[in-house]
Length: 398
Image 1 (spheres, helix red, strand yellow):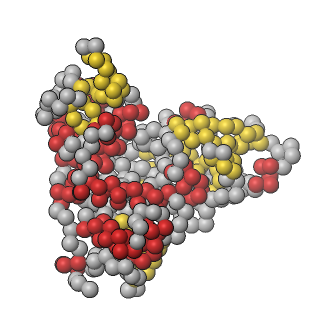
Image 2 (spheres, one colour):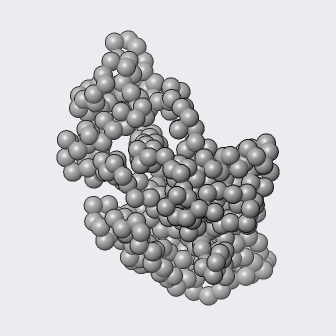
Image 3 (cartoon, rainbow, N blue to C red):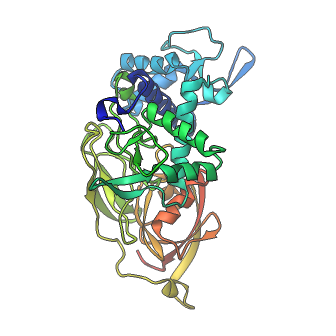
């Protein structure tokens, strides 16, 4: 085995930056679709599908505090244009102009160039998402040379999984893919000491595809990569995005407001069937997350038998929640049954009628009363953006 200085034959920092541009661009594209900034537009008797107007985009970025001035906004969007993420609808303008011109994301019109580099990152992202969205024991706390590593996987088990999931057809192809992922900085040996080997060495994802990127990061040619963490879709959204010490609200829309201090998106992780709230600085990517595990909002523990007992003081409701680019806007917690721990008052879940202390009965038609919150999280992650949930709430609980 080789030492740390020679262990990881990696592509240049330009490739890592390109990956960040692609991920950031995709996150922006989803937001613009949700806000109806991207839509079919008509000009001179011709309809241009899935377009945005340059000037409107700059206005939108300023309104949403993604940038502080128009000059910075133009530089950011130009970065997307330079990397082929967006283009003028007629490919007439190679420089992004703050004007009433139509631009389109290449992913929306099928013209995105899938060169060899892009294909590696696309494959890496698909594998990453599939690992986090399905029940498996591949990534867990493991020990190598007396040191414990979170969310680590064994090389040979990873290749077994790639073959089983149809990502590769044979082990040699799986090892080749893994070497490519390591070469591009998507995965690494836990201690960064070894190449990828089909054996018992431990590896981790070095690139966190789910981390919410800030657009201004595009101007940093060598952005630091954030260690992997499982960012659940059950996240609360920032109330003050321009405030580095902003808060999240844990509320019932008609009652009780609790302030949970945080500086970025929440994620779920814990043992024993209850979730925790993690926060870490958006400007200090190497800082370990700080765990704050607030007290359950339930007034007392409730069993499945109590919920389903004849004459029980609970009523069932069906909620249809259309997730936005930030998330669904709620936190689920507990185990058999799970309950709603927090709801963003301005998020999709609150709009649909979700409140704290409701119990989760089913997700997209599947009964989940006997499941823990991690499994419910996986169900939503693997489903569509629109989630249909049955919940039970106590009658006259307000």
